[in-house]
Length: 237
Image (cartoon, rainbow, N blue to C red; front, side, top):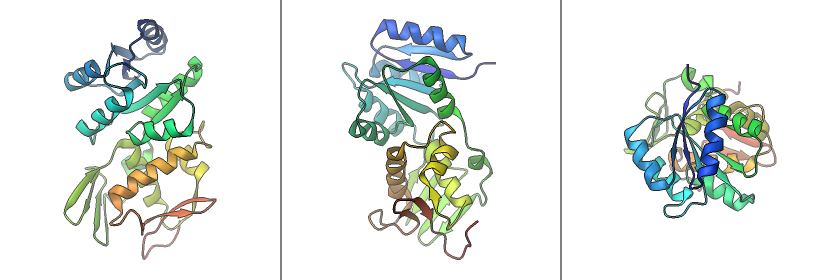
């Protein structure tokens, strides 16, 4: 059985050839696109589990492609890993904010890339088992099965990683969850220091879950420690 279908989007043929050799040897099916435009067309016609997306492409950039994918597939299980030569926090935050699940800096080793792919494809068990299936807060309703948040009649949709993160919070109400615990629970055991991931994803979740994202009532920051999901009437677990 295939370990997953991956679309590699890169304008350099040599990189696509190396990727094909690596991915096929490790049990993945691979298709390739040489531009963001052709990637979007392929995604409309075929199903993939993950996109490896080069950030620096002529024409439609990697960031623009990432935003277009998320806008057209708001509840898709499709994972996106951005590949780039840039290694500063501003670029990482920009890529994650565009909808990427992970960010890998070139040059990278084959074991590192494969580990990142496995992490992106893994689903947190809590995402499937979270109870209740729906959660009603004051003015907010979260439907975990539909991956939908409704605030005063306005709907927003959760990506898979956003759902995983919110599910983990709901399973541990009113408890301070450290950065490391959250990163390892959602992204995997190889993570722990990527605090910018959490800052971006918490910002995204607050925009979808909080009635006033600038003054969060539920997804709270615990300075120097981590985050806490405030659920009125529940004890911490």
